[in-house]
Structure formats: structure tokens, C-alpha cells
Length: 291
Image (cartoon, rainbow, N blue to C red):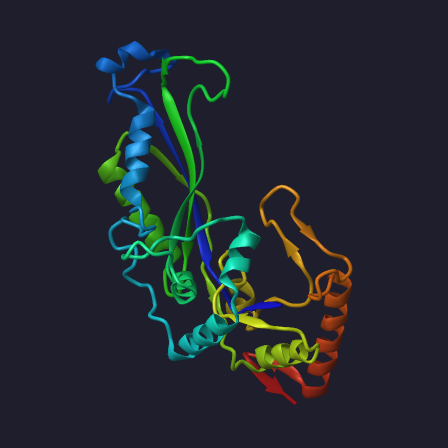
């Protein structure tokens, strides 16, 4: 059973490069033989993306790490506890990969290194579209346009507007011919295991006698900060139940327990128990109980 005490924020952005005054075909694809003396929007986009990130995964946009918060002693303790429980091979099997990033010694990163990475931003190419992509046959063309969807995950204490500006400045400096559209993003959220609500939630789940993994930060993003900042309501992610394949074909969750982790029915029962427990203790306001 996995309990997550934080989630990353996100900024989603789109990059278009179209042929025009700077070079490249203006309005249509042309024969690839002309690439000897005509520039390519597709290569321009590939070059731009390659400048954004090192092969290690480190983001190369200047200033991106300036406000990243150091890992607290509280979180370091949770990392140490999680390392003892986490089965790395089972984790890789669950996310369908054979190997994680390599470290500076070209060895696969350790469990501790992997969890520490959750406290750092990450940059992802979500899609690239340009030209002829049929797996069968061939078509030799110099393309007039290229497009990419990308996202960057934010961690404490990164600020949405600050990162937006850094992305804009980077694109303007490295590819002024590109068109950039930054969609609305949102910030990260982080809870302490000492929060009274969080402590009761964890105690309630431990009463099920199931194995619990407490993650100080999660891999994904969600606008949980709204509950925390605007309403003073602490939020955590996780509980009884089993599901997998997030954002992949055949994403699923069990209705009934099949692995010992429980299903949606068990989850709903655990929520009822949690609400009962909270009712016995009192209500929460600004992270404190009021009797």
C-alpha cells in the first residue's frame, strides 16, 4: 500500500517551428534533395529540445534549479525508511521498464537516488509531430513545420510564473523563430507526516495490517495545493486498493481485492473508518484539531 505526502506541480507547453523568413519551406513540404541548401524546421526543433536537457535527465534551462528546496531532515528520514521497504525490481516491472537512469559511474541509480530525484524538476517530451511517419514505404521530404508538446514537473519551492519566464527566455535566445504556447500550470503541494490529519490517516491504514510504503513526494502532478493553501485542508494520495498503467492503455483499478492490497470496495470502507476516527477526535482547521 502506497501513501504519498506530496505531489509535483506542472507547466505544459507547446512549441511550433514553421518555415519562413528565417529559412525552411514556407508553406508546404518540399523534396529532401533540397536539404543541401534549405534549412529544416524539424532539425531546428530537435536541436532546441536537445539543448534543454542532458542525457542524464538534468534540465539545462538556465536558473531552473535556483529555487529548488533542499530535502528536509524529516523527508530524509522518510527516504531512509522507504529505501528499506521498496522493491526496486518490482517497481520497474510495474512501470514497464528494464532499467532506470545511470549515475555518474554508469551504474543504474539506487533506490535512494531514485527517491531523491522526486525532489528535483523533470522535463518530458510528450509528443513530436512532423512529416511522413508511416512505418511502411518511404517518402523523402524536407518538412515545412514541426511541433512538440512538453511538460516540466515542479517541486518545492519552484514558482510557476518564474519557470514560465525562464522557458520563454530560453526559447527566445535559442530559437527566436519558434512559436511558444504555455498552458496554465499549477504549483506543487507538500504535507508533513506530523500533520494530525495525516497521522490519523496513516494509523487507520496501518490498522489493516497491510504493508505500507510512505513516499515523501509522488512522481505525478495534481492541483492539491488548492485544498492546502486556499482552504487549509491537508491532502495525501493513496490508500487501500490496487491499480496500474496510469496514462497507458488498459489503465485499471480492482473492485475487489486480488493481490492483498484491497480494491475499491476496501478503499471505501477504509474512508468510512477514517471519517469515524476523525469524528472521534475533532475537526481540522489550519492543520490543527479543534475539539
